Structure formats: structure tokens, C-alpha cells
Length: 211
Image 1 (tube, helix red, strand yellow):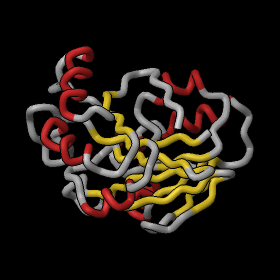
Image 2 (cartoon, one colour; image 1 turned 90 degrees about the vertical axis):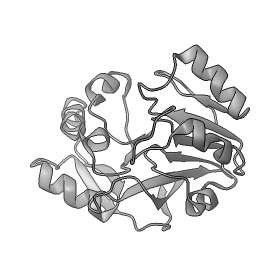
Image 3 (cartoon, one colour; image 1 turned 30 degrees about the vertical axis):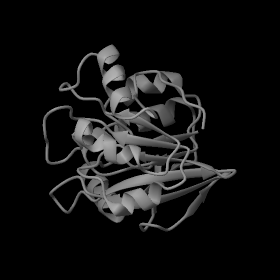
């Protein structure tokens, strides 16, 4: 199993996990890396001896090395943008996307592929770019930043503005993640998103998807 980001809610999420083969980190903000101490606790409680392979960019590696004293549970692999890496039977690749104003927090979108099918995970995106469109092309699933609705924040998409463009991208389906407080309630959000893009829907806790 591949885990994308280790959030500050990892202690709760970890109850469902019996195996973690690798971790992909998108960026160094605490909402993506704040659960690394809890990941260490999970690693110890499960009697692991080998570190968990963690794939990330150099900026994120520098941040977590300065922030956390104990990283013996992590084997860090620096992945340059657009460089493919094999993780078991999967192939992973990343591209930089705009997110934070601080250049220390370079942010990745990840593409995970197997058997001719792939998903793209782009949870923290300030604007849609031609690079991300090309990177996502042909994906079965695009998991996309859905943080803002009807309001703007410099570090995230305003999804009711961005979704019509993303809907034209050559991907089979779109799931919006990181739904923020500006969004309407879930049922209304489902209807509003469907009106903007028939192949899109919002994520929710516990959602399972087949790719």
C-alpha cells in the first residue's frame, strides 16, 4: 500500500492500516508531513525493522530533517520532477505545481501507474497549469484540490471557477479533495459539482475508488 502524505490526523487513520509499502510526500507543510511522528509510532508498534521508503523532493526533505529529530523509520528517496521511480509493481512520477509562496515549500503532484492505468494526485494547487494538464493526460482518475468554493485563497484552487477548465482535460474522472469550509453541505456540493462537470464529484472520509 502507498500512502500519500502523512497528515496530522494519521493517528486516527493508522488504525485502518496493517501495511505501508511506501509514502509519497507532496510538500513540507504540516498538513502533509505533520503525522511523521505518529508514523514512527505505527512503525514501532508493528514491529518493523526496515525503514519505510519515502519519496519526496529535496525541499521537503530539508524541511522534515530540520523539523523532526527522529526519522529512523523513514528511508528518504529524493525524486527530481518528471523522473520515474518504481515502487514494487507501481511506477510513480511527480511534477511541480504552484502552491506556496515560500520557495522552500516546493509542491508535487504525483502520478501512480500500473498496468496501463494511472491516477494523478494533486491535492494542493494554486492554479491549473499546462504542465499539470499534460502530466494528467490519459489518467483514469485526477484527484484535485477542492479547498475553496466561491472565495479565493492564494494557495488553493477556487474549484467552482477552476473545475470547468479541469473538466476539459483528457482524464476519465475527477475527484475533489481537501474540501474546505467555504463549500456547501455535501449533498448540495455533489449537485453543484455535477452541474459544472459531469465526470467530477467530491471526496468524503472513507471513500474507496477503483482505478
